[in-house]
Image (cartoon, rainbow, N blue to C red; front, side, top):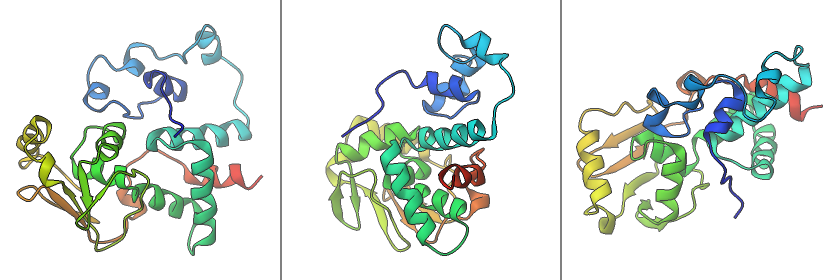
Length: 212
């Protein structure tokens, strides 16, 4: 399975903003975007003063930003866009709704992980059940009525014991999810609305990119 293995802080610097790919570190003074505001590479400073970006460049950067936030490779992202274009409604908003309902994102939104990358690893290692069945596929799409829970065998691990203590009254979940800290589970009670997806993205630029 293809995945990005280079330093993720470079991705934030390339986009010129925090993508929150490393959890708590992104909120600390150690954040790469805070320390170094120029793009990565030998020509980073020069690129920062480059000429105005073209419309195509803006569209591509927005698409890349969305891919990097959700940790999706290009081919899979294109498949999500095709699926969004087949559904009713605004394609850009539907695309974000599909990305939000990925299992790894739901685990992150429920507060079981500090970042989507960490949530993806937890799912791959088989620490969660979906509707009572063990799952290890981060890209699974959840739907209303689904229940995501920490597996019984994982609840006594040091990670989840510490995590549950941190989650006591400290997790704010979107309205389309409900969290039960005592049972270490969360339920999908609806579909994500655009105003609840607190991500600085212009999804219309992504639609324009793939509509060229």
